[in-house]
Image (cartoon, rainbow, N blue to C red; front, side):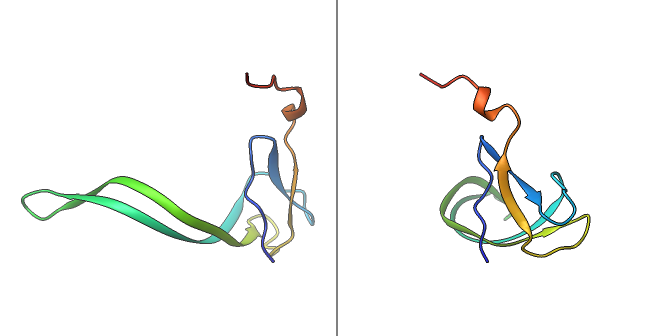
Length: 84
């Protein structure tokens, strides 16, 4: 089962316990990282470009339910002013 990521108008909610704040998310992604190496050989990621990303599963941290998460409207999302 896959689930969409939350947006500015939506958030996740566990259908079993009602949790809105704590989730373990398993995801896979393909990225391009720009690494900068200093003269000693230590590296630092300076830029990351996400090519693709997929959420594989979401587990509720409160009740440990797997794939029992739904997207619900965020409070006040419908009242937010539209951007011009």
